[in-house]
Image (cartoon, rainbow, N blue to C red; front, top):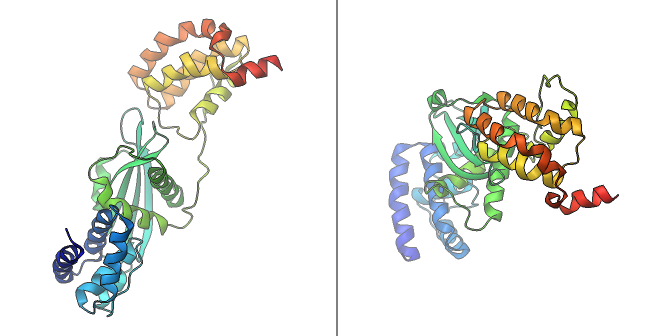
Length: 311
């Protein structure tokens, strides 16, 4: 499609959006438009240049909508007054929680409203914990959409920071998998998360276990488990617990005999807190009996562990 054809099609769509008078609908349209720009920077620059030389109401809408989703643009005319509402939203709630039974994906939800109270909406972003928290999908829905999700209330700045981190990871990882629908919402998601106060880099909370098992070595064992879990505390699957017991501990951890003996009970206690999934408990039962042997096998130790043992 030539730039003239692309611009003509966008003008027709913008004319329709002017009749709707919906800031939200226009911003989502602009986000889809930006996704099309990503085939090359020149495409976006050329489009914005066309907008700047156009004095039509359609161009005013395009400029306002593009600016609202992070692409600076200006038209030769101001356009209708309602265009000024685009991007001017307040976040009045946030939620965070598992997107599946094992927390391999987590969901961050942010609720927004415009200054006039109209068109309240929720941005929900899926973050893939297995691949470091990278954003893999997003959707914009009515607030009642939250009724079908089992998420816990969270500080908006914390959720927005996690969303922005996930989006930034997406830009650093080439060809990372994502839902087919994600690209069209990405610019909108970044813009929305970016307006939330306190949405800078977050120091994620670590693992905590209110009651440790009453066995010798439990505190030492949990300290190592918490190091492994890091700030991705909702992700606890059979594959992850198996990796911890069969590979990570023998490779990385130096533990007393008491801590090695306590580790299965500590892992079971953490599992009860982290979803209490039967499949995870079954995996512990499979892998835990071999833990003492693996911990004693020096051939399984990684370089850092070997150097620490030599020191």
